[in-house]
Picture 1 (cartoon, rainbow, N blue to C red):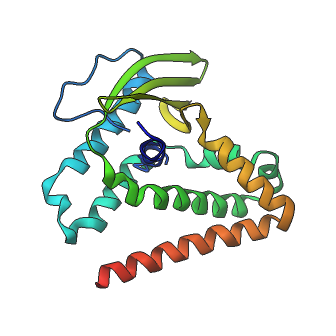
Picture 2: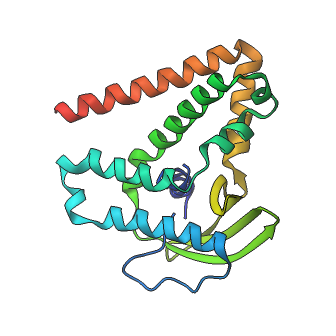
Picture 3: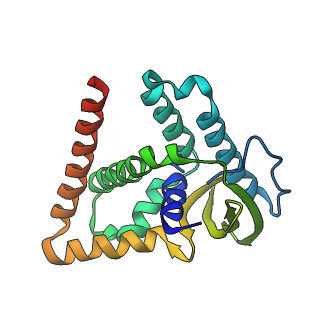
Length: 218
């Protein structure tokens, strides 16, 4: 699997928002090598692929509906609040409740918009569930994504909140999504301030909405 495919995989499950990695519907999935956290990840992955495989949702006039369904499925598994907190690191403590809510929504949009188009590129990669490591309310589900030629590690880090396992980070080939964004955001905050980071995120969101609105009219 090349870097382009790896980027797509990261986009699918991070961010999928859907959110975003999957087990094939057409072929039997490998036996699970884990517990409740693994089962939670697989449930979401299977539902994402089911939506992508639905012929009715592949019609041009169903694009927005399919994306809404993907966002709903991924949003139910991903803990965007925890991801936001970890991404901003120390700066999170400086924000009031309203600012935290605003940032979490903008970060969620960034992730879902990033995978919205790339998720369409799913071509039947096989997911192998390797194992699950647990420490208290935290778990890491290790998987490998295979396309018949190569495999790439894709790991999910989850937090158990009230009996519900929520993904707070995705690690693709050793690269943490949260750490990657943390570095980018810290640089912006350091050079131009937190308000500029919010503005940049809002601008990206507005541009995406405008682009999709224009496409819908064509």
